[in-house]
Length: 443
Image (cartoon, rainbow, N blue to C red; front, side, top):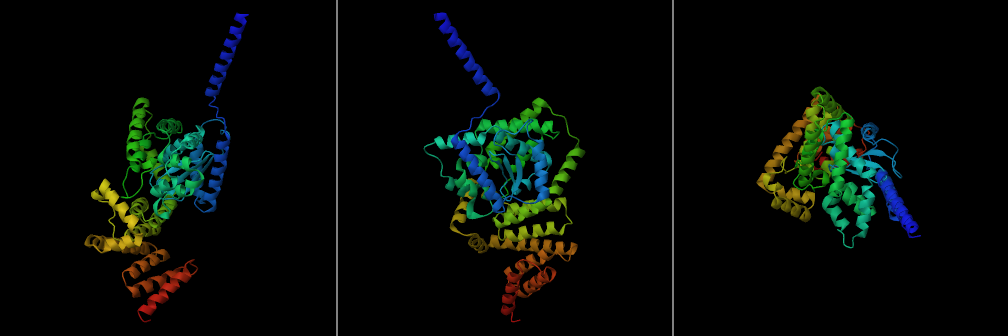
């Protein structure tokens, strides 16, 4: 009798152990009500991004990112409640993020920073792991358990200051999916991030991409184009140093095959050609977000790739005009902790136009503006030499002359803009400015 009871107990234990092992081996994820509620919220967030025009509708670039993304998926069917989609997000912050429903977004700011398809593939593979391993749901569960959590509104304000295009994804998601979005931007648990990088490393080798481009991408993200840019996971320097270190170690351990330099060069050219339009749009968004240093760095990449493009020269000119009294690059002092705090203090105290006037009241600011103004005018003129009918360059010159108080020159530039672009959406506004300037000069 006792043996029978013991045998039954042992049998139950064995069955339980076997069941748990089976669950672990198939990586089963059991959805809770809170998980399903999160799924509804991210579906709505997807719709919001699309409805507000934040998800790019550029078919060519979306098709390209989708093609690369699909090649990075693991074999087999998609996990439950996952529908894969790869989209470009119109945001100059260099970042990428994944929603647990399978929507993976790459910001224009990251696309414009990366140099080739290999680097893009590694980013997409990394984000795919956050979806397949259910990191979003796990992070949300953890967030809900905490009695004291960071103020997401405060977090969103730090990461995406000023209600500009910079960090739009964070701004909109800070209420709908606060814990998930915080993790998507500043990073998940260290081991989760490392697992995502290791998957990416192995997957890009499988896809015949060069894993050496992973640490190269991280190094690009270490750039300090701005003194005030917040540090997200993708450009947080200490985390990036760690990622560079362990991926470099993996490369040494596995010694992946060398990719011929001709192939790497071809991929770079293809990537830059396919993303050229997106980078120009990102330059515009960065200027609107008061990150003209970033805009200039991206615009100069455009002219390095395609120097005889009027559109690219116009982008460079706009970036220089947008700099105003700022230097093209942050100084050493600006990048120190005290310098960054000073910049943040100025931004809290002044609006962008007020801060510009403050800098123009100083000799260094006026000197920077004179230099930037000259560079802007030079590049507008270069664009017009290549394409005399480039209407936008006349619009830029008009704004430059108007700011300088050169009203006659501004009127002539604006009128040329209207002549070349008679159906311009801003035609009424430009005509009003011309009329105002003509009154000031007595015409």
